[in-house]
Length: 387
Image (cartoon, rainbow, N blue to C red):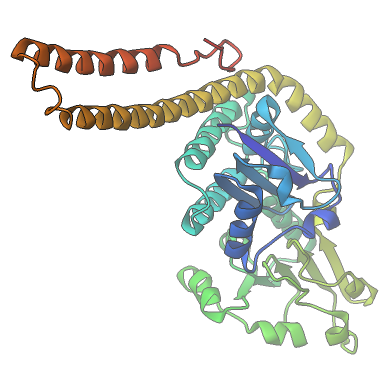
């Protein structure tokens, strides 16, 4: 069984459209609803800083109906899309290494909810392995380009050494910055909607925490705020800050949907940068991706063929096991029925009784052999040939 993908992602879609489909709160209930309405056997949902993706095995993926403009991928195209994404070829920052971890996290959550099982796990792990192989072939294996690294570069170039930075959120991006900024001489404090989680990130690194409500009221004492939470509504608003007068404050808003209102840019002391700026399509970035995509094309096609072949082999094996179990049950029932006819077969001598048992046993063997021999064989392009 192969997955069908439906997706909103940059640069095909505007980030505002992508943000409309990012689900954080109540995701388990949404996963169950999507599985129920689509009839999918398994489903995995991924949301990152620039994409939302539904991976659907079986059923009707279109029944999820996320809205107009959604992109759909199936067959070879689906595998190529997953591979390119896993290898960082689909990322605005070429070589982004965060996607494999995000894929694993999405799979874990789907399995915990009970909407994904062995096929989803095998397929995702297979994609990640092939993506790593592709990275090595393209020379991206040592790449470490991500939104977090771009944000780090922006802070180190734009702030004086010793500046104070508040990190809001406890995800991979803020954790990366919490580890790197102190090494570069910055004073760092951590805030989060759940105070205990802020301590979980800050304490092992020897960093202080700051109350999020305090920052929302007045970011006094900080030169920059980097925010990357899963909050459904903005944390930092024009209403709360419009009466404040203070030195320049940089806001690096890495969240989707945004943690800060765009209206904050009206304030003369706010310098706000959001994901759109970090993911902007520069001429250099476009050229790098185009060159990498051209170099990757033959490897993508080959890897996609391997993934399809293995997925179809797994599907044939599951089908064969299921058919064997049904056939075994049917022959077992037939043999039990034959035992109940012993009274009517009283006239048979011992040789005839043995012959009947042999016929039943031989029939079972021939039936299983015929079942195995009629299974379709894979062809070179990964499709199943008809017997």
